[in-house]
Image 1 (spheres, rainbow, N blue to C red):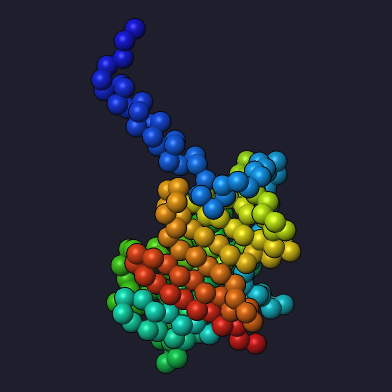
Image 2: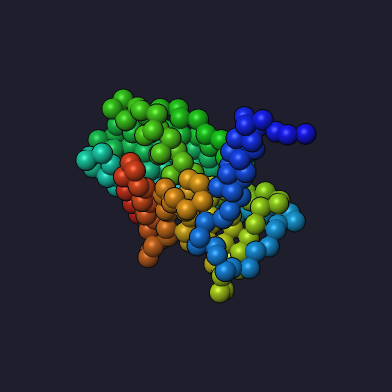
Length: 203
């Protein structure tokens, strides 16, 4: 039985789709892969206090604008909430995250209220929060540390601490990087559109 041209095109597109999304980013090439037989919870980059709150001095450079103020993280058993306010007390953004990775933007400053800005901020901040890697995803050993891959995000962990997170589109297009630096400072850098976020812990 012969296939029609339309069927062949659909099949080839399907194969191409699988090829693009089943392959891991190049950074994992040559590393030993292990499939997780149970889910793994990775620690948050955020250093919460006993009351479940963490305060950071926040500096954002985006779209030729600079905004600074406080970013407050609050966690409960059910969700995480992140609020940023300027030094003048104006709310910039307020986002709630559930334990499954979903989010709701409760508020965003009017001149930032565009779909790609909302999504960029929400997904960038999500990289910092506690993450559960579901069973069936892959882990990779790299020297003394581990890399976990839950598409489209890579988590780099050492001594049970998450030190770097990379968010991808497709196989090798890295959209954003969150990295722990000296003195527990966190820096997020996104490309296209360019957004830079620096978080400095406040005791």
